[in-house]
Image 1 (cartoon, rainbow, N blue to C red):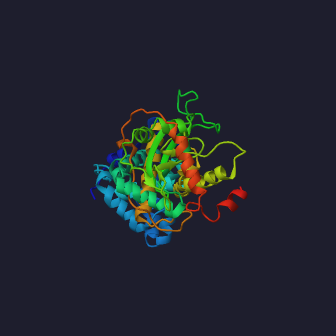
Image 2: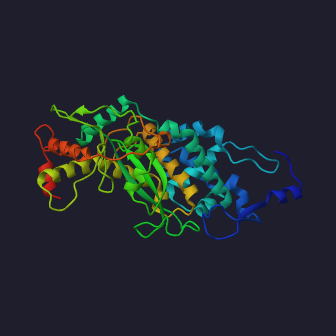
Image 3: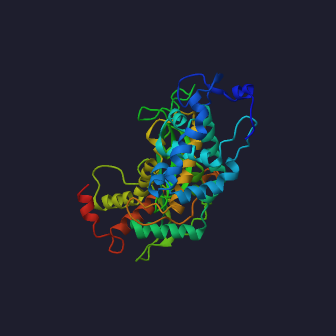
Length: 407
């Protein structure tokens, strides 16, 4: 390696650090400051230089560390390496793509603060900020279309087949749901991001398939908005309203000669549409309506399960994200892509079914057109068709009466 003069060594020790102590503040305020001696030992004493090489030799430990196997960490790195690579400078060696990916994944997997990651990897906090933001941006830009692609009519039929086989709901294309992601209060935002839980948040709206994979995601709605309103104003909601998603034509319900449209299934926060089934409301429901509600709830459980899997794998969601919304949006979208990527390549198990990874067919909201539309009275008729089917000999499941009695 090139020999440096004392003056050059001193110049190498100059860095930019946060001016304020608020960890994870974005974008960070900066000032010139001498780097602590410990930070100059990253290449010999940082976590990547010491612990990482030991983890590589133990498949179980590296899975615990990154929430993915070593083999699939390497696969992800191969896909992103060229985009993560930085050039060396006269005064220092660039942080390698492998270490940059490790820093980002460790931050997402643990939920540790960027200050904690800074200490463990012997990196400036501003550098951790830059690595996480840039890596998540690259994941979104380079892997989105691979992880979330628009289904064809045949793929929709395959998704519906899986919902019927796994969850006993025919003609079902997915389950939408919203998840609040807690963030710090954005500056000058008033109550726009203040949600019903009394915290500031952005909303992740997702459509989930029968195997808990994300078919569609929409990130960034403000916390005060409700799931139904977010859905109505989303690309997904407009595209379904205008029937421009290659959704199959109405199909005969299994074991009957009754024709019904393909639908998605949501909770009471969503509107009733010919393509979106929601529960019957009220307390004094007859058994037929209660059975419909039970069967719908059972199918839409996949969206809840998907969020459970997401938060178990990425512990970043177990704490408040100390970032402004535009940065938090990118992180959330990156985790959704990694969720599908891991389940596609890493053999992650479903919460209920115990089966292996899903098919690879998904839907990207950004590709859908935004046009208006109105719901129809026929939505009530469609719900009646499904209610009658679930209460018929052809559509009933043996345990449904006992299940509604235990509710």
